[in-house]
Length: 320
Ligand code: P6P
Image (cartoon, rainbow, N blue to C red; front, side, top):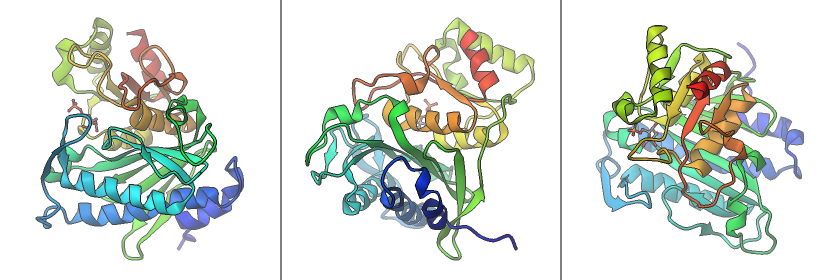
């Protein structure tokens, strides 16, 4: 039996790669490791637990119906991050304003605690997306400027996918590694060391219901995928589509539409996070014109068009 390496062992072993003092990365990632297991437990019984299944009856800042599991996951991540002491504030898809801890911590976190949550009730994979930035402000309280850093300033980026198995995938800028949760021992174990994405692929992921809303360039690219008899795969859950394409090669697109002229996805806690991961795996991510990681944010919840995945496919899609 190959020797098992746990996420905790891996982080400790690679701590020296983390730009800042030792021990901090372990602390930072521990929250996501622990919360990931706890959210996984609730996701796996969502169909059974009346108190978790279904809508909460409230709306989040996006005006989207909050699923009870959204709220549970958001509260849990915030609680664990607050207790760690390293994080000074969090920007979450579920909170209109910055959630301040006022503890002088050196980092801030952006996150989508449970992306794709409308899929919970139909048993489709969902995910947590998170990024970690070093603060640029001083003192006890973080500022908006800490969150307005371009994605190329991320010190770590990761996601947890709650699917047929639960995986945590992350990077600190030294490659991408994937860990699968072994439920029998409640531990994330290294299952996908040094993940890389193929330069080309034969999977395109886009909501073709918006086809007549897309630009001519996007429509031409989709038509070309069909002419090449590529596979259209669109789960409607970003983390699941992204993860499959990362492993097999492919492109995920959420272009601008008439309804969403800036696209639908969020720069701070969806596009930036996955852009760092895909670049570390050899892929690319743009908004159709500019590298995602070079975009200068101006608002917490700002949207951006997203073209992400295999380098050759994204470059071709940009030519339109
Ligand atoms: P549409 C889920 O709401 C999400 O943010 C992503 O997970 C997913 O890829 C996308 O939106 C689906 O959006 O408009 O195609 O239903």
